[in-house]
Length: 414
Image 1: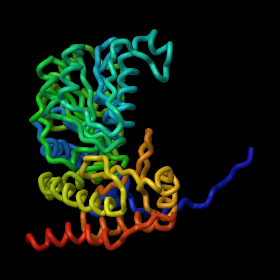
Image 2: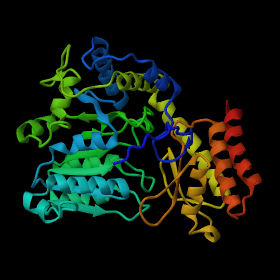
Image 3: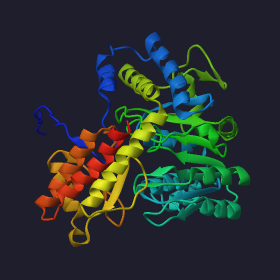
Image 4: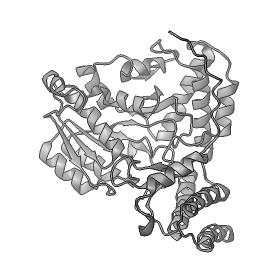
């Protein structure tokens, strides 16, 4: 057997202009890099974790004691949230894109009986789970949720707040109200909305559990902490039924964050090895979010998304999304079918945009932590140049006119 020692890995900087991960703020990176080597039970690490859980409650707008971060990406947080779903549990899941589709698969795996899992372990058809499919490019509305929950009366109901796969915002108020009316415990994937939209989770009492991610609205590296929050009702159910996991068990995870028997305590108990670097970065990301305020950040996202939307429409594209951190678009009709060619060209030039991961193929351009006129103009110019290099006509006067109209009007209003 031969042994190869490869050259040192150098990864170049790219402009992250997709649905996520987003660009991590320089302050967060500085805290990550400045943290000293410390064991996971060091007093300053534990103090940082205690402060994080309190700041996270403020960011999420909740009095839920079981609010903390799950080490890993958004998938880690989602898996933790879904850990209370047991084989045979009745579930209704609303799917309107790639990522809510994966969430739906996760729920089918969790709720499948041993026989159903053995019959098709990678794609179990759990009889207790109802998947309500919404066509690509459409949002989940309250009437759809109401009808499904009234018919099936499930123990659990699931929805993604923002479906990044198609760029659609779903009806959180309608979902919560329907869950409350029909006694379902709502589960919400808030991976793309937390830190971008201004909302407080306690305003949605039909939702029993929430899971988000570190690398989008919170802008804290892909591998730090995925925010989760659980109501007392969820925790009571979990205590009664248990969960077939150790690593992502919400009650066990909470103990390391100093949450024991439904109350904050001075010192948590060991559950996993936490990183001082990750704690320091997460702590600073939460501080930054609170200093900016969710209201100000949400307004900035809405403003700059509108500028990006108008600029790409001036290039002849059609935007089909309604998120404020991302535009999902179709290319001009005479350029349709070349989406992947265009995306690969952009990526090769250090400009990271994304396709949709399900049909029909569309282009996704994001502005996570790119909230300035200069950043949005740079994104638009790079995208227009790529279109032009592949032979598309681009009216840059119209593009700059759209950007100027949006930004100059804001300056004048000040």
